[in-house]
Each structure stands twice: as structure tokens, then as C-alpha cells.
Length: 366
Image 1 (cartoon, rainbow, N blue to C red):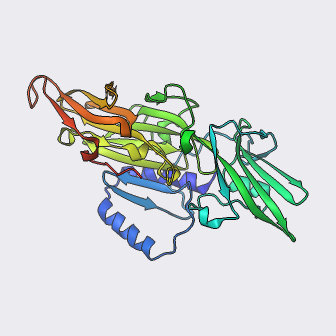
Image 2 (tube, helix red, strand yellow):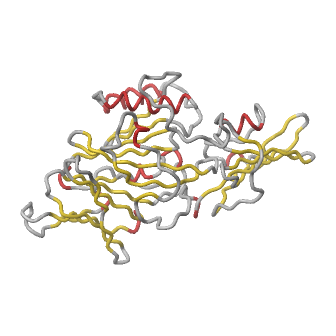
Image 3 (cartoon, helix red, strand yellow):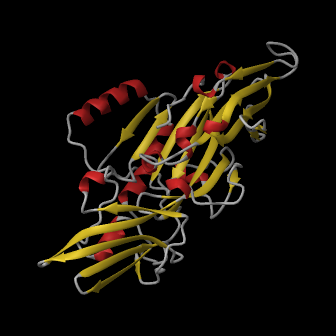
């Protein structure tokens, strides 16, 4: 169990009972980051995104009380370490991206750098690979990372240069068109798609009676390994908090106020782990509207091909209201429509239309 996993969960449990000035925290963090050389990007960075403000929290070896460390799924090795062997020889993922290490100017992201430092097992452990294989063929060596089921995720080739092995080429699994998404049936619907969702108690405390699963599906991380993330929603005061538990070594959270002037909030940046979508296509749009006053009857969106998609309605008896959630390809959305309940402004049968780019939380797509 890595300390980052323990820290992530414990920090968020501790944060539940505290009020935080996010604007001040963000400014202070930004100042510290500007004054410190940036380390390589890591998939286990803990990101906290609140409304339009985001703050990245990084900490050392610290374990706060109350964290339940039994929640993470066990790896194929009871010790949690990588297993040698059992990795497929060929890729089965939709596509692969190639890193040509002989042309460093083409490598625009330092998320993954092929290496044999410390040995193959150490490298597999560093990148949380469930399985690995290493072989040498004359002046060439190959390091393969695999998922728990043995499917091939990454192949790195090294060339001998004197007494050293020099990285030459790496092929990494991706989704279609280089996206992070692992193909799944009914990928345009919200809900559970594959695997076992991380329990809401991963967030700390007993949330079984409050949190509702919004979506759970798998993705390819920057090393080509299959991970999955779980998104939950739950009321938090006058807001609804939406949590994305990622792998679950990191967690992203955002919220929207009840009503929020009757406008849905764009939470598209939370749908996939932000650290995984840098430089990779991401066109999944996610919108959330929270109604505690019975002012809303429905939420829908119009696609450019003429189709209409209606929101999923989430809630529990213990909830004060209903959460409306929509998922659709962002670049295909013409408008979102908030349907008013009878007797609410602007009157029976009234509706308000919104352009996606004008909604709170919108962040221009790269």
C-alpha cells in the first residue's frame, strides 16, 4: 500500500470537517509552485477542483487518523507487488502510441520515461504494473508491462551501448483515436460499466446512505495500463459534491450550489482523470444541475444531429432534492435545456436554453 493512497483518503476525510478558502489556498500553492522547479508529472497527484478554482495538494509521509486502508482492491500478488510473467506478446487495445526515444524533441510529455534503473521489477512497481516481463536478445532488451489479466499494456525496447542499456522505443496502449477511454458497451450512458466500483467510503467515513454512483468505467493511463475510476454525488450542505475516485491513488472533487441560478454546471473536466488527458483527446461532456426546491422538472440537451438526450435523475430519500446529470460528446451538443416545473418561474411549461460554452465550469477544450 503506497503512502500516497493512504494520504489521499485521509486528507479528504479530514477536509470534510473544515472550511477552506480555496481562492487563498490556490494563490498560495501557485506561489510555491512558481518558486520551486517542477518535478515530473505523477499520476498520483491529488487534485482538488472546486467550482472554478483548482488547487493541487502535495505532501510527504503523513497518515491522518480515520483512514480505512482495507478499501483498495488487492493485486494479483498478495503482497501487492508486480508479478513476473504472464504478459501477452501482442496488443489487444484499440490503438498504440509510440515514443521514439531517439528523437527527444518529439516527446512532449514526461508522464512516462522508459528506464531499467533499479531493474525490471522496480520499474514495474514504480508504475503500478500488475505484471511484467523482461528479456534480452543480443544487443536488444524488452520490458513489457501487463494488466492483472495478462493483457499487454506497454512494450519498451532498449539498445545496448557499451555496458549500458539505452531506451530506444516504447509502444503504449490507448483508446480509439488516442483517447484514454477503454471501449465499453453503451459508452454514452452513465452508470456502472465494468469492474467493481470503488466504494464511497474510499472518500472517508460511512457514505453508504448518502453517496450515489454516477458513473464507473475503465481508462488507459499514461503507461497504457487499464485503470478505472468511480464518480459519486452526494449533498454537502447547500451544494451537491461530485467526487471522482481515480485508481484510487488520486481524487478530484467539484460542486455546484442548489439551483445555481437554474444553470447546469459543466463538470466535463472531472469525467476523466485530468492528469491522464494532458495532450490526449477528450470530448466527453458532463453537466450537473441540483434542485432542492422542486423548481425543475427535467434537464435535456439537443445534439447537432437532431437527437435529444434526457438527464439521469439521481437521489435518495435522505436527500433534499434531485441531481440531474447529462453525458454527451461535447462537440455534438447544440444546447442544454432546463425544464421548469409547473408554477415555477418563468411559469408552467417554461424552459431555459443554454449554450454549453456559456455555462459555469466551462473550460475551453484543447
